[in-house]
Length: 272
Image (cartoon, rainbow, N blue to C red; front, side, top):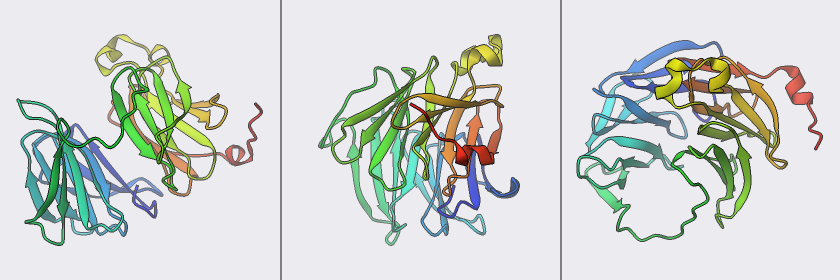
């Protein structure tokens, strides 16, 4: 979502970046130029620019309204994550460790596109802090709206909540399948998790056994209180709308679903 929540940006294992009107699901346009799967997308604070990273070894900057490509940064390996700073002047992206190249986190100043602020090799860069609470790969990290906490989703079947300042481990949310994505509600003490059985095993698994539902947990009590069905493959990404009245999920089945909460959701009181 962009900051206002009226636009929803989606990417998939194809070269097309899509933008949708989140109110009714109408596709407003596409950003065309990548030649490989697009792994990440972000919009800046005032939704003027869109940033994407792809398996075609590039990170691209677009004009949000016209879809025109404004800048292209070529990399040595696939770009896995990307994002803007709050001011929209600095972009960040990280690359995969593949084809003999190390992972890098790179920063560019858009006010001077020819100038690289710095690139930090993850292998030799100065490490400010480190925590190891998960036992397997971390698939997703999302922050709370006030930036005081962040939640991680892991292949070890858990999502974990941390304090942004101290990195203290606060809560753990457990499931029976790998967790691919986790998000924090902007208005309630609720967490939504998405995941399911590994994609390579989906063809031999029913939706019931694969556990492809989005699962809701109470932030403080760590207890599950609801599930939402719909996807027939693993959920790869979940995100709350900025107003907290709906959420979106993207799955391996090729669908992005926008779910609006019933009135009962806002009246629900959790009993520990």
